[in-house]
Length: 476
Image 1 (cartoon, rainbow, N blue to C red):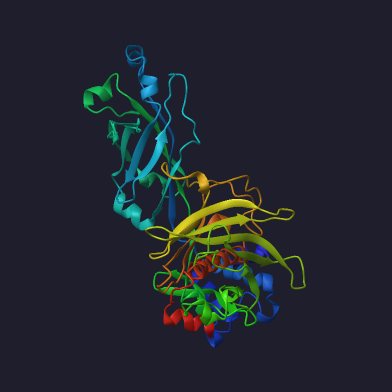
Image 2 (cartoon, rainbow, N blue to C red):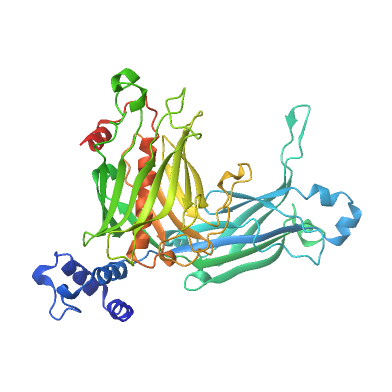
């Protein structure tokens, strides 16, 4: 198998695509003579290896900014006995180009001999190839350091006190081919040039850039319409998977269009259940699945799925070692609706393994019910300073992230972007290439993305009408 993959990768992309078409019955007589193998001799596993080999990841980069710390010269500390307390609650805003501002805490380093923690308060930015072209060659990090809120007086909250600003040039071109350390050290951040040169505060940063290629896959239509999932390279679309949406006819009819309990024959019918998504590769074999394990039902006294009783999906993958049709649990996705000025759909993913009942929490995300948003698994993302700790990673992810992958050691794993509940949603999925060892690994995340997209619909208030297209897809 490995020898074939190496031989297959050595071929030109045009020849690989023609062979790929040949395997799926679309190449016909256009296939050049002397194929690598006869079609009859291609096993299912070999077919999957060929599909993965023809998938080309797109160029992305991971820019990490960490090892943050703030210090004052010894002379300043002697003259200002209260400086340690005053500077112990500092924050900094970091911005690169047009990317959103990232905010994090900056620990105070009280001793000149101490060094900042290399793993604390890490900020990560992900750059596409177009971002590099826009930012280079004079990319600058804009940093503002200021004291945190020190409370209020007479009901008035004090304004933030800026300690200093910094524009740090980083040579992004140094990290285009291989990992590169762009900066590591102390820089003056005083309010004026004289203060930065002498006796002023200093900020420590470690800036690193690593290539982080991704597979980019797109649902060609709404999930309920059983679309193809394609990889797009420029104007060329390459089919990778097909998605089959099924609603169990034996389950209770969906409460999607009517507005009263009487229309449904009682409150017991106010539920959404029996939804299932099957992911097939292009040979027709099922490679992943997602199905509703817990129905989406309104909580008592409400018309929405509440946090106290969330709906849930199970994500499964077939056993590669069994010849019979055997499935294994991979993860459990819970979803509910949080009411407010702007309603949000909360999604929580636990990765499951043998012998575990609750699993490991790897993602806790809130998405706008109206505008949609992004669901992600990213071990480097931290909870914003002002938010609750609900989204923090709990426990260890050793060996748990995918059906056949090694342990996740950190960084970006996947994300999917979905639209709001009343919009046509065609999920866009990004997968970190280093976590995709086979086609089945990619299929698991596609099944997860389909469950995320359908959860937005399943969490609709039960007294609200859905658009006609969605109703048709769910009832047909």
